[in-house]
View 1 (spheres, rainbow, N blue to C red):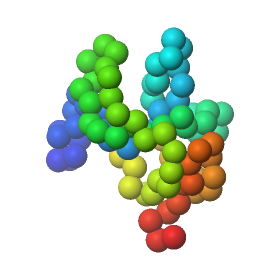
View 2 (cartoon, rainbow, N blue to C red):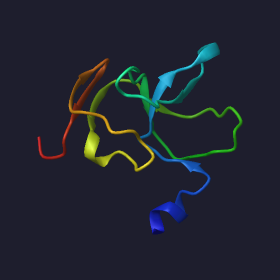
View 3 (cartoon, rainbow, N blue to C red):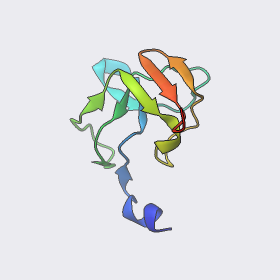
View 4 (cartoon, rainbow, N blue to C red):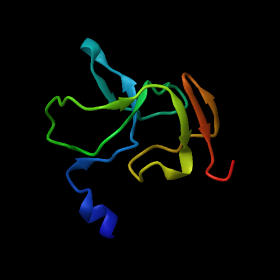
Length: 88
């Protein structure tokens, strides 16, 4: 699809992040056992290297607008985030 081609080699804005080791953040993989620490604010190249990037660290997030790369998150309060469907 066009979206897949456009974002090949990139981490898309809106990707949920979790706290990793050494004060770094990494993509959230399992929403059932991990709490989002933030959401990537801008698209970032996925080079395998550490990158400095802006992160949304609290607030309201429309879960049906998250990128295809994101794991499915259920609506509700999760950590510092109010996760809502777009029609709420």
